[in-house]
Image (tube, rainbow, N blue to C red; front, side, top):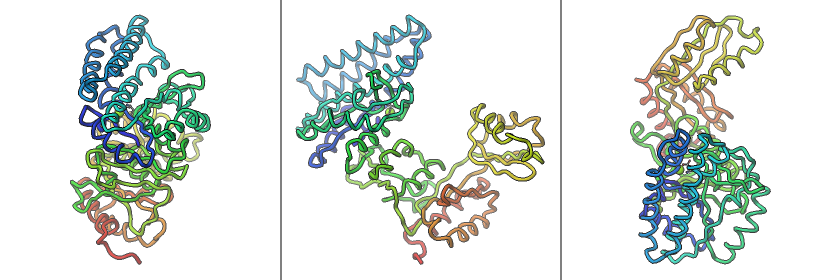
Length: 447
Ligand code: ASP
Ligand code: MG
């Protein structure tokens, strides 16, 4: 069970999470916690400040007060908890002062400092569990999740992590204790602390689930699950009960922002279902992500707004060796996201975020040939395994898009998604039409 930063932010959040864990105690949960909301950002800011010789004491004092206050509220008579927190803050100060003194940091020392939010949160969560009559114990994830030394985005070694889990996590579970691990944290085989990259706690949970051969992984956040559409646009939008991993990945690419599918990939590959659930509404079932979830209907409609189509006229580009590679490298080098590209005999069309990125792209392409850009476009996407398994859906979906003056079409990986680039004033209408026809339960019956 992994709890995100908003779920564990503050005393009430910690208590709520403890009740959720308590309700699952019969199933022997292992808990992963993020830092309280905003803490990792604050730490990153303090690191920056230290590097430039700026002030760090106030920032550290703010974090200290915030955590001690929660500690006092959760466990007023526990004297060890504040002591452990103070110890962590001492270490943090030493690290930050070192960086300020040297005016430089290494990725290695940055990782050591960035993980403090999780080190603090895990202590508080154990106290909250104890308030619910649950015996929790902090387990140092830096000694369990074994990673390479790619600091800032370390990659876990599943086999090594499995061995550490057998040693340090499983015995606790067998004793009826709930292990609590900070997410985001790892360590090299030699014990040097690493982090898995921002937002890495989901990956922590997926790796632990896999290494422990858990029945499932639960990602607890502050939304009800993955939605079948944007409720502000699509009246019938609802939480998707079951979705395939491929569908969830396409959805994330096309604009849904609940979780980063790559981070749960290890769990899915290992055959574990991943549940997305709301810690503010634990009675709701949430969304279950499965390796396969064949449904007769499409899963969702997503909108990605404010895009631009830039056409580069370059006849004969196919005969220029490495043209596409150079082009995409230049685009990436300028930090412009390439949403999609259509290569043709006379040139290439590129779909990119509008505004500055489109202007940048225009500048990059200057000299390459005649350019033409169209702004204020929306990519409306229909996502569902059903699109691949029921070929008739394609024609119908395309026809509905054509009625709304579709400009370009995008087919997703595995043919499980269909995207239509339309002008902004047609987008919502297309989203509603597709959702009503292919996603809503009341849509036409399966054939
Ligand atoms: N606390 C870390 C972050 O904010 C990791 C996480 O929350 O997943 O990036
Ligand atoms: Mg976070």
